[in-house]
Length: 139
Image (tube, rainbow, N blue to C red):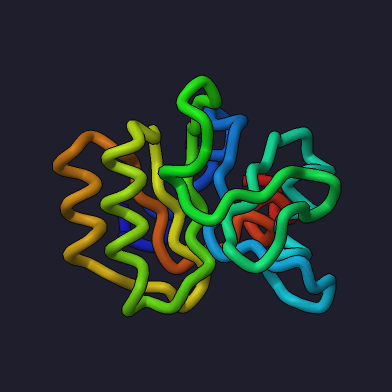
């Protein structure tokens, strides 16, 4: 199977299994893609925890400045990273430390070394994809 098809299949599996999403780089600005994707995830029944130092609340959800600030009793299935590739590795490492089941690097966010660290730690990795697009295509 070609790598693109494998990633599509993995994206579908992750979206089917994971219900609680920590969105790193969530924006309170409705014109930003992260805000729009957060709304799509909420509309599809996911629980989304916004992670940003820029707001206290986004879409009526309490926001946290970083993954470590999210209370330990809130289990995180998936960490969706809406940051530039240069910053993705730090958040992948935070996701590993937090015990997330998967990391999702948004369209254009590519960090192969961080992806390998996540896989080595047992996390599923979806990279250079958007969950809103994957949900729309029905994967």
